Image (cartoon, rainbow, N blue to C red):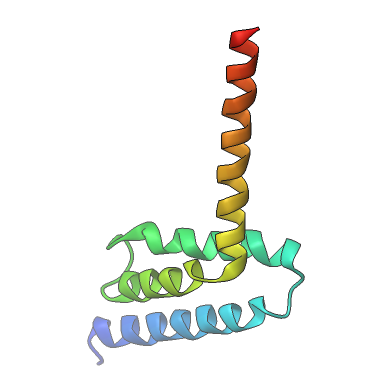
Length: 96
């Protein structure tokens, strides 16, 4: 009888393979569809030890790799600019 960790290793190796396949398919999507899926994969990197030994490290690596992609950077820039614009509008309303 195999130890249970052997089954776990196979399970998590399969999960890693599937995540890598998904990451590879991101580039085939239009930007509008790719952005939310990329963000979701990045959020998986936030589990930090809550799922399987070593698997969280893998997810964190994937998240770090994806975080460097231009569409994520652009979305972050857009969000910051939107926040700045919102603050400017709030300041303008307060002064009038």
